[in-house]
Amino acid sequence: MTALSFVSDPVSLDKPALRRRIRRARQALSPGYRLQAMRAIARHASRLLKRGKRVGAYLAAGSELDLEVLMSAALWRGAEVYLPQIPRRGRRLWFSRLGAADRWYLHPRYRIVEYDGPALRAERLDVLFVPLLAIDDDGYRMGQGGGFYDTTLAFRQRARQFGKPLLVGVAYDCQRVERVPREAWDVRLDYLLTESGLRRLPLCP
Image (cartoon, rainbow, N blue to C red):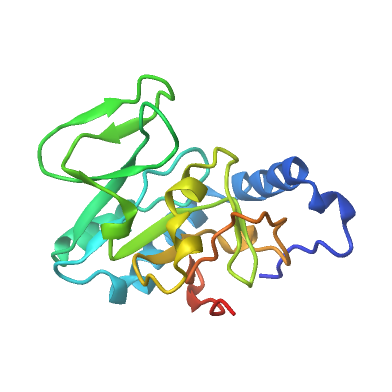
């Protein structure tokens, strides 16, 4: 699928306008296409879902690509699955280990579903599947605007060769753009996972 262009459409340089544009494209996908994509990304990501690995995932919100099948595959293969927890103060996420017990709850402020399990920071994960709204071929992502992942992954700016976790952006092909508006604090991702496959992104210079 052809990436959206920033060059021929100056309004795309505006983050709110680009967010609206991508959301419309994502919401236009049919339920059948979404189901096929959900299954496809689980297949494409299989080599990352190894026994004993700590895998960070997310619960899809709105029209985001759902990781339900991927998480089930990870658990079946013996990996540990962790879901984000928003702190009561600040924006640095914790990641809570998904277990068999029914320990779901609604975050008191944001009213989103989270899981109450043993928690750790992103630095201790082996793989982190990162939600996003748009991504370019250089590995830069644009999120929803809350800044949670930017804050959580800031350590990768301080130590580019940290190595963990492997950062894998998850998106539909229609979310790929030519260039994402960039900020000094943006962290580049290592891989892009879409319904078309798992793609290694360029290494940081």
